[in-house]
Length: 404
Image 1 (cartoon, rainbow, N blue to C red):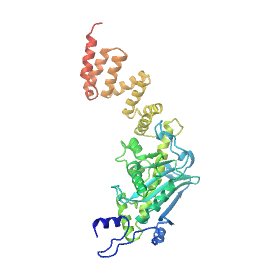
Image 2: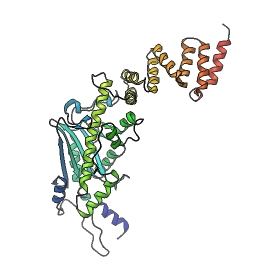
Image 3: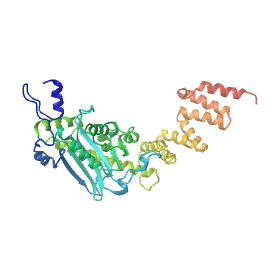
């Protein structure tokens, strides 16, 4: 048998045929199903059979008062929705309905048509709290059944929340749906990827912005010693396909479940920060870098007044916030407040602040002498990388020495 045929059969979950043996029948819903009951029992799941194959479904519920470290996960209603400030002002409003928190475990990181999302966890809020449902693929021949189950879990979702899902999880799942000629359940739904948020808020505070690191440092959660490293996940699934022993998947399902729970907690944590930025009477972030990061997002999404509040709350401990506050104040016509910040930054050796003061003296105060002094300070502090200081100085000297 050719190597290509061997690989194709392996991708379909069929055992390789020996030389001279008749071709193995392809798996289909009409073929006798394996007994997945023992595997389901070992994993605390149930076997779901249907015309398109079988999948395993595992559920875990958390009460309304449940927390994951420092953040709540169980609250339903508006507290569990996606805050509109997560998106630009021009974005369409997020419709009412549950938010789906999605995380997938895959057979590899390369992507492409040969990579399966063998386990998909979907978390949603309801009247009684938060529920995580996990859909496990018991064999590649049952992928259509698994995908239809995932689509059913997303049917009522108003938005999808993930961590690095924009780059990996969602494109991979969309590929799998397309290969089975199934509708894309993620189409036309707002998607909130929390990884860019983590980088925006905590990259200056943490050694990395992996979900595990953010969970530990921000949510104060350290997973149990038995948590399965992500690098081991594909090998454990391959071992299950070879042996039908589901023991190795117990940790994989726990890892996936905890990822989904962490998504809900992290969304709630960032939501509280957005509410603080909007002026709600709630506790704000304790670290200036986080308040500054929220301000940067709010400015980028068109909410400049809220961004200015964030910058002003962070500027004493984080100089970049003072610079951005001055920039917004100047644009809004509050030049005196901007100048106050430029002077403070310039006193700490900020070349951009000296350049801003030079422009202020030249164009607003009509004071070439003061502008020249600021240009000389800018030159001494490395301002040439921000501005053509030689040309600016020549122009100012001409103004200073000119008639009148």
